[in-house]
Image (cartoon, rainbow, N blue to C red; front, side):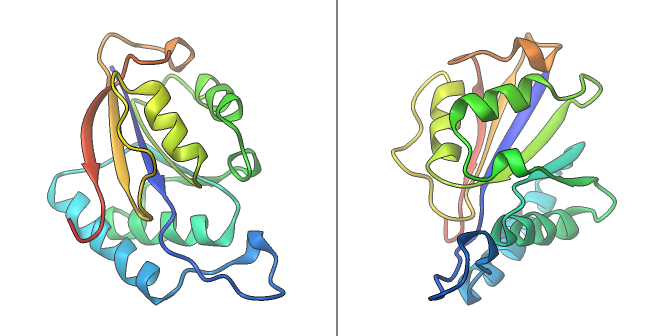
Length: 162
């Protein structure tokens, strides 16, 4: 069985003159990510690895959530997850080491929402809110390369303020 948890980065600031890649989380984002970490930790959430976009807002979200759960969980940053399309995410997932059973991908809309809707048996939403956490379980799957559209069962769909 394989499990993917997609996390949309927490709310960020749009600062005039600052590159999109370097945008930080705003106060709401800095509050929401630890709240989601606490919720996940209370549910016994413990993935094998976090993969994050290299954008500051995604990295910070990943760090805050990972650190709130267990700072020993590996966190890897991948430039492919920034400004990526669903074919990029699909290729990324298909190349994950099969020794991992549960991975987390922290990224950006619209791709995060598109991936959830692509992999889930049913469409979830038109747009995931910031700091959303959606987990999909692929019960009869032993290899990441075998993950295919519309085969994932949604086992978590949470967002701040819920």
